[in-house]
Structures are given as C-alpha cells and as structure tokens.
Image 1 (cartoon, helix red, strand yellow):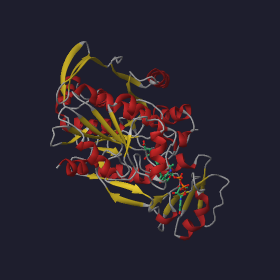
Image 2 (cartoon, helix red, strand yellow):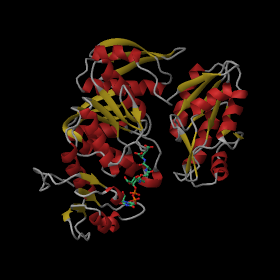
Image 3 (tube, helix red, strand yellow):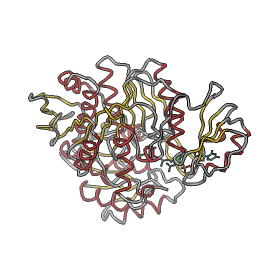
Image 4 (cartoon, helix red, strand yellow):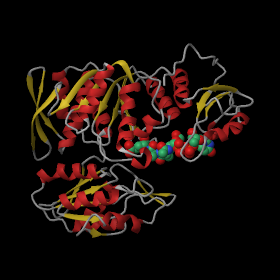
Length: 471
Ligand SMILES: CC(=O)N[C@H]1[C@@H](OP(=O)(O)OP(=O)(O)OC[C@H]2O[C@@H](n3ccc(=O)[nH]c3=O)[C@H](O)[C@@H]2O)O[C@H](CO)[C@@H](O)[C@@H]1O[C@H](C)C(=O)N[C@@H](C)C(=O)N[C@H](CCC(=O)O)C(=O)O
C-alpha cells in the first residue's frame, strides 16, 4: 500500500520528538500506536496523550482523544515517513543488506571498504552502530524506527557520508527502516530461520523482498549474491522493478568469482569484472566470507567505487568480530574459532568453511537459543554430526526455557554427540581434547557479550572464555 507524505504533513515546529512506546513520550511527541505481537499499542494512547503527545499515528478505527489523530490503515509506514521528515538529513549514501546469514559481515566489510576509499563511513546492525572510532550496541539487528532514524541523523551530524545497515526480516516486516533514501540493496542468501514469526518460507521471503520492492529507491541498485537457491527469484523480482542489477558470485555477471583457493590464513580469489581478471588475497577464512566480501565490493561499486581499486582493497579488510574470528591457539596448537552461526545453514557454512583448513579433527560446539524457533534444534544437531568429527552440544541463550530441554531437542538430531551443560565447562572440554592438527569451532554466540538465562544477562564472551580455557 502506498503512503505518501507531502510538505510538512501539518506537523509544525511544536513537534519535539517521535516515540512508539508511551513510556518515552514527552510533551510535543508524535506517538505511533501499533498492533504488536503481545499487545495492541492503541491501549497506550490515553497514557501517551497524558504524557504530552500532540499527535497519534494509528489506524482509523483507533480511539484518540486530546491529540490529533493521524489515521491510516498502515500506521507503521506513515509514522516512519513522518519521523524520517523530522529526523532528516541522513548520510548521503545509504545501502541496506538483507538475507539470512552474512548481513553483519557484509555491512561491516562495506564500511571498511568505503573507509579505505576515504569516505567517512558507518554500519548499523547486529554489532550495533560501528564507525572507525567506536561501536555502540542497539540490542537488535535492525533497531526500532525511532532509534534507527535518530542514529542515522546522528551519524550525519558526526560527518558520516556513507552508511550500510542490516535489514532483518522482522525489521522489514515492521517498517523499521523506512523513509530515508536507500540507494542500493544487497541480498546474501535465504535459509530456514525465524519461522516462528513469519510462519513459512514464502512469507519469510516476501518480508525480505520488501527491501527491493519498497525500501530501495526506484532508481537504486540491487547487488545479488547469485549462487543461492533463492537468487534467481530475487533477480527476477529486482529486474521487474527496474533496479540496476549487479550480480556477484560464481554465477555472477558484475563480479564473477572465477576461482577460490583456501590458503593458510585466508583465500586466494580470482574475480572477473569488466572482462579482466583481478587477483585478491582475501585475509578471511571460508567460502561464505568470500561471498560476503564480494557482495560488499558490489555495494561499494554500485555506489561509485572504482572496480579495480575496490578489489585491490579487499586484500586489506579486517576480520569481523565473532565471524569465524580466531580467538586463540590452544597450548596443544589447535586454533579456536568463534562464530555467530545459530541456524542449521549457518552451522553448515561455518563447518564447511573450516574444513579445508583442518588437518586433523574438526570439533564443533554449539547450543540453541530458548524462546526462539524450536524446529531448528534437531536440524542443527543433524548438520553438525554429519559434518564435524566431534560435536559438543551445550547451552546458548536459554532465556526462559530449561536449558536441558533445549539440549535434549538438539541431541535428538545428533547421535553420538557429547552433551555438556554450562557453556564455559563445554568450551574448556572442547579445547582440552583438541590436538595440534585439530580445529575447534565455538558456534552460536559470536560477538555477544552476555548469556541470557531467565531474565538475566550474565557477562559471557566466547572469545574471552576460549582464551581463559586455552591459557
Ligand atoms: C518479534 C518482534 O520483532 N518484536 C518487536 C516488536 O514487538 P511487538 O510487536 O511484540 O510489540 P508489543 O510488545 O506487542 O507492543 C506493541 C506496541 O506497543 C508499544 N508499547 C508496549 C508496551 C508499553 O508499555 N508501551 C507501549 O507503548 C510497543 O512499543 C509496540 O509498538 O516491536 C518492539 C518495539 O519495536 C521490539 O522491541 C520487539 O523486538 C523484540 C524485543 C525482539 O526480540 N525482536 C527480535 C525477534 C528481532 O526483531 N529480531 C530481528 C532479527 C534478528 C536476526 O536477523 O537474527 C532484529 O532485527 O533484531
């Protein structure tokens, strides 16, 4: 459904802010009242008005008294467009990346490449808001619309001209990233995740496609990883909309991955572009890091970067926090990698990425998060036992669930796996049993700094714990 906002939409200078939570309303705020999963936000309208809301964006049937009712059947979208007017201007060049896995690495590598080209750049996503000077967590991959837009306008005030953000399927479905001009969208891949929220793969796909259908500007570009099973469908979609297509990958046309050879510390790539072959020594491990690097390079080229220069800079990128990050080499000599893989497909990709670098056994440790898609638990167990030489099933973020129940569900798909409750004890056991030729993978938590048990977030960082256990 189209929503357009002309002029100032009747909102004058007395507007002091925007909020989607009544507890954040101050005098002069425009309040967005939305139907949520747990509660209908319209029940908070009276409280918001009492706190000083001067206008409420809500469905036409909502009851608003004491403030202007800005009514629309799609209040989230209208709210986003109004808020974007309020928070603008934003960085001049903004791109978004969607897909099940690889979003974080792709936006981070895009930020790094822009920076090396001399642009002041930032990324927004699972790692938080990252610039060359700091990293501030927002809690979600795609923050809520008010946090997102105010972060974007804050970046502009800091002089950031180029920003890459992660567009999660939840974020896209909830219109958390509307209203600012997005000049290019990137697609990494699609596999089973978040079906508790989206219901089935087709709805999940449709949520992701909002990026290309509505968020990317009509004269924008689409950078598509061409080797995923969903890629052709995405390409069909973006071509129909008339976006400028840059496909990348082995089947890619703009940046074609002609050859990839794992090396001790990374991989040697041959990339064909504009009829020439470019050689790149990518200092990152794993086929999918090459995919992320190529998608990032595509986004930088799509936003004006010179192909030869961008590909040359790929040899100088830094590993992304918690993405196949080597935490430590154990006393016995086994490298220990930390990775955020928390889906069957992510786990498969991480194990497959490490395999060519493993002389001995590949030991994989992971768990599954509580209060999230339970269907994936045995599937993760199955993938790990099929691909790794030894599997340790432990705890991830149990949240409100009993950790032993989650472990049992994973173990159901993982015959022969070792079960060790308590993530620290499990990491210690994994490292203790690794020999010089072995590799240890600690999967699931990546960059996370805490473990969520019940309502509490206890300090926990896989990289730090691995170093302590190896010490
Ligand atoms: C499932 C989901 O996406 N939930 C998000 C959603 O919550 P909801 O729709 O259930 O909202 P609700 O609690 O029912 O409340 C409805 C409305 O009333 C408002 N409210 C609520 C309570 C109150 O006292 N006053 C008030 O005004 C709320 O702000 C909301 O607008 O809107 C909230 C406000 O923006 C988000 O905080 C919340 O994220 C929760 C915390 C969450 O865990 N989200 C995860 C699943 C998520 O979004 N993940 C993605 C994907 C990550 C990935 O790719 O792996 C992400 O982008 O991070």
